[in-house]
Length: 91
Image 1 (tube, helix red, strand yellow):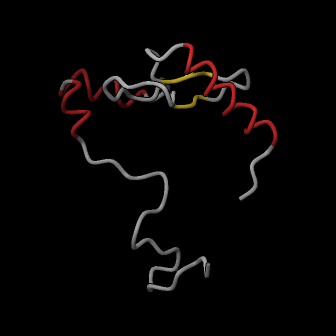
Image 2 (spheres, helix red, strand yellow; image 1 turned 45 degrees about the horizontal axis):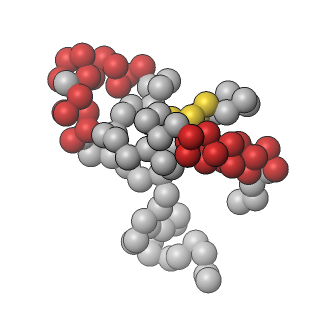
Image 3 (spheres, rainbow, N blue to C red; image 1 turned 180 degrees about the horizontal axis):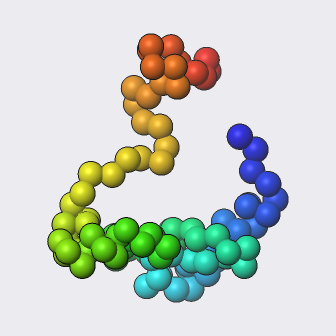
């Protein structure tokens, strides 16, 4: 996967703005993309555009939302793209 110059600039922007605003969980770039603030150390908050989170929180509470199982956006140990144990990346 190759990152574009725009996405690299967005991440740098989020890092810089996040450093200046550590109380904000998410930073919105000028390309209308949300990034997690790397400087944020508060409790986990739902993504600003996650409408289902608001409904879940209204019904069950924020602590139940924080305790729910989450999928990792990055493949972890034991992950394979093929499902048969073959490693999709040989190095």
